[in-house]
Image (cartoon, rainbow, N blue to C red; front, side):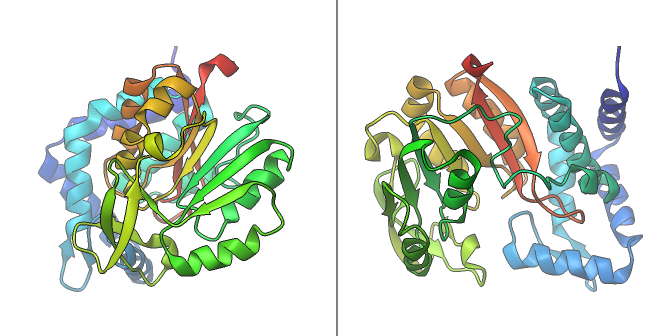
Length: 313
């Protein structure tokens, strides 16, 4: 028998499934244009700053982001159902409903209810087991903030070693200072991907959003975690601006053999939320899947997929 969260989710997805792609797009445009103009402009400025999902140009009536989202909804409705039915708890299921409802109806209320305000970003103590002898890998370590959150969440005795990968040298300098008092933390100024090669990245005005591209302005050495770390990995946090799928591919053997807990950002494009969970389970079916939400209430970002080896149940 369906509970109220099930009813909300299936009702919304079935409504989307009943429409053509063009009708979904028109619905989203109408919902967006019904927002106060100042809210439209605020969302536009945020989206166009990062350009992960497509641009909005309100005054020119160009809504590429909405068109992209409409296509994803139309093409992948069954994948949303698959994800919902493979999430382990109802908090995760409600988060998925709220994300879809935000994109489709520009509803801010459900998304606001999902915002995490107890645990630190990535480290939900309700679902993560007690940590002991961790080899913790932070991919996209920025200035070491997530490393410090990890230590504060689980204690300095929870880990044996921390590897921090970061591509921006200014961030690396700041991280070196931030982590100076923490034992066995190794900072590696390399990108993580599915290849051992020289790659390029683009600079963003927000240095946390620098990302690998085919023709970026700066050169960086990239590595696969399968090749770069030979010891067993027990936890990986990953936030690399859309490079997550390639990085996961490059650590396939660690996922298959080590069963590391995975904390993966899945919001940097329009399909990672759907593709990355299947990718992980394809490598290793021994995982329970959760979603947690650390973003704001106007546009769904900072979505984290937490994959916990089910042997911890």
